[in-house]
Length: 279
Ligand code: GLV
Ligand code: MG
Figure 1 (cartoon, rainbow, N blue to C red):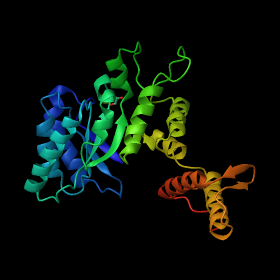
Figure 2: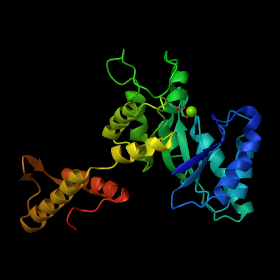
Figure 3: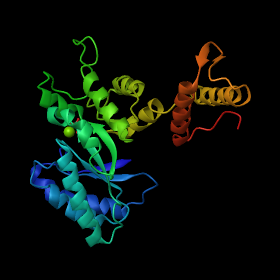
Figure 4: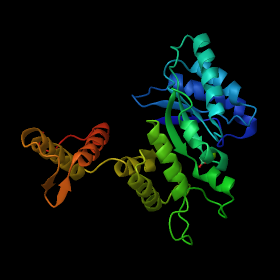
């Protein structure tokens, strides 16, 4: 997925001109299969409706999603959904063509994340915004999304987990936000490994150097992928042929829950292009 930003990386004086640049990039560059998204300005600005009308109205079918930042309530998602429906109709796009990603990056947004994640059938992903969230929480830091050595744990753990639970309950992809020390690739890997361990699907890349690292961190290793297949096979044999619901596989007990974990891992590996060794 690639997104074009109209929000916080664009100066106010450039907000309106940036819309045309995003439209031209979507229409004129030769894109591969990736999802294309535009981050519009938040509803507490004066640009949101203009961003949607102009960019979605003119970018054509190749634009897949709109990202809504600083989401505070389900009503804000509903408002975007309704606006998109009208813009799609006027632009000759199929109804429901444009999906929505929401960024949770404030105290109010986090309180309401469960309703937010269920607010529209257009929703595809929920994204944590660590920089704005740190500002909203008045955390005493100047860089977003980085580790805080003086805190004995992960200062974002509660927010990350709450967002993950809400996103999973509604079948959304759950994505971690940016790591702002852009040249510190080891730090990026460490922070990404944390949210990967929780269950996150991915993390924002800010530079091309980030992409390879993040793809590696959020994809299963070949060994894990192969082991998942072995578990599925062993469990299928046990339950279908031997009518056993739990068996010892290597050094561990596996049961129906192990099958589910293995299925998720296989699906994630297949999305990353893995194939079983030897096949
Ligand atoms: C991203 O938008 C962030 O605020 O971290
Ligand atoms: Mg933000």
